[in-house]
Length: 62
Image 1 (cartoon, rainbow, N blue to C red):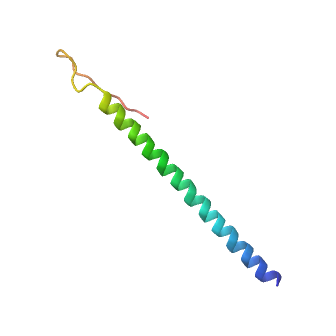
Image 2: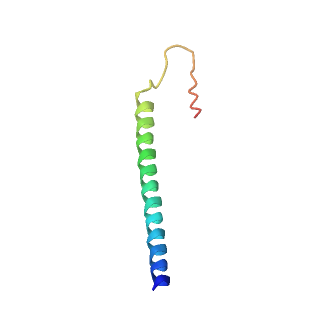
Image 3: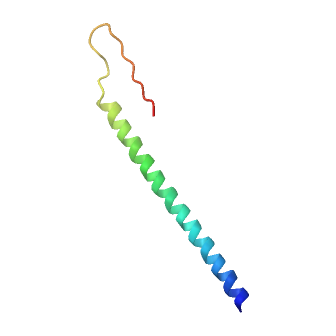
């Protein structure tokens, strides 16, 4: 009986680990979507043109 309990415990542990990985991935995807929306809002709020002959450069180094 000890062997069956060991196998069952291992299976439950593996299922728990898989669930944790899926949850972490879901949270990461949600955070990335939120950041993408924030960047889109930032770009939309930037002026499209600057007055005068001076150009502009936007450096988005992360």
